Image (tube, rainbow, N blue to C red; front, side):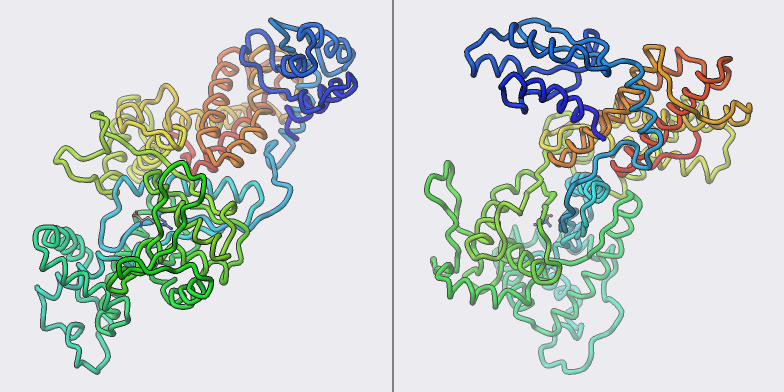
Amino acid sequence: MILTDDLSAAVGEAFAAAGLDARLGRVTAAHRPDLAQFQCNGALAAAKAAKQNPRALAEKICAALKDNPNFADIAVAGPGFINITLTDGFISSRAAALAGDERLGAWSKPETETIVLDYGGPNVAKPLHVGHLRAAIIGESLKRVLRFAGDKVIGDVHFGDWGLPMGQLITELKREQPQLAYFDEAFKGSYPDTSPVTLDDLERLYPQASAACKADPQRAEEARIATAELQKGRAGYLALWRHFVAVSRAAIEQEYADLGVTFDLWKGEADADKLTEVMAADLRAKGLLEESDGAHVVRVAKEGDKKDIPPLMLFKRDGGVTYGTTDLATILDRVRSLAPDRMLYVVDQRQALHFEQVFRAAALADIFPADRLEHIGFGTMNGKDGKPFKTRAGGVLKLRDLIDTVTERARARLADSGLAKGYGEAETADIARKVGIAALKFADLSNPRTSDYIFDLDRFMAFEGKTGPYLLYASVRVRSVLAKAEAAGAGAPGPVSIAAPEERDLALSLLAFGEALRDAYEKRLPHILCDHAFTLAQAFSKFYAACRIADEADAAARASRLSLTAATGRQLDLTLNLLGIEAPQRM
Ligand code: ARG
């Protein structure tokens, strides 16, 4: 179904017939759309390898292809590029097939894999902040892209519930309420079902505890001991910890839901704890677990490493486990319970070394092959000062506040632009929320994942330019064009027949979707789909300005344009959906 694949096959045959590698016939969209629609640069590489003149070689390929009925023109440009222009008839028939395809020309993966997608990574008692935002937004989009391409994807939040912060919370609460049964080692009864802390308590206790531990070594030591005791299974601490986890999870799950982000599994670091001992025994038996300064580590450095890869610490001197231990044990847990083909981690790029260590340890211990473990890193969201984004007060911005802020701003923007006028309060609020979230998500996703970007709400919120609101507006406009056409009795969509340049460009934009999806899938780069959505919306906008649709007098042209419009609406909404962006019905 991918147009450039079919063109590549045809041009590849001509290369093969000339005794050259068929793969050199790879055709891509033209870099200069003003000169041609498609191009092939293979003659340059072929000429170099065969020590021939590139232009002469390109001429030979063109001569072999000039009778291809699908090509309106094939010609050599510059030092040996081959430029291709398709006939309108061929473009029309491909566009018609796309319009009739349920998947709108999307690519499907030849074989299905079972993939665990680890994204989100929030932590108990810490409010979600913008640092967790990117993981959620990128992860949600990748989940949808992978699933749509055909994989079986299991999204796991991997809740941060097993480290030092847990001991810090326990000791902090003990100072405030030492009388609670959880702290009494002699207590033999059953612990209360209701939590002794609320979400507000947790959000107060954690910063308090972490500041105290920083300032006072004695406090830090207490927290360290409490963490180790919790991890060894002290009953009162476990009971208390369960409350912390439940209270946090309820709040965080709601914030994710408001953002349109959901998970199949709410497992945490602690869930893998039961496997730590067997895993350690196995590592020991394989001679991989070494003592170092009282701690136990796995050496993961390899000969030929370009940088220093420190050992992965499995047990600290007090026997406590680390972030690395829980991640390694989690891999084992996933292998046993889900038997996946691959595991993907959508986590901040700054954790790259951690994942390198864990992946190497997993391979060394024969738990899972390293080439099926992928760290999908991402850059930082910065403030205008170029440093990780902070609020005006200097704190991290909480996700809840961010969602409220974008919704408010969207409401103001809608009012300024005269949109959503006269709609009821509930609908206006819903549109504002969708526009706000779209602004935020699209701004995040449209940057190549590994780059940093600057948080600039005014820019994200604009209805013009490459923004979420612009795309929602485009989607709504397509819908309204179709609704008006129907109301006017414009008839049904019919066979696509392209004549105007704006029709041609729109059809070619639609036909680029299959490859964009495959690219986004293979590179794990959602911004490729953002680019596609934007190009498509722009092509539609030009088409709409240049061509009559419902009021076109020629019935065949009208039916063709209705087909193109309907396909654009469906493909745009599908692409937005793959980005995790929801469009309103109208605005
Ligand atoms: N909780 C971690 C953090 O806030 C992120 C977890 C990412 N996933 C993982 N398997 N390590 O930094």
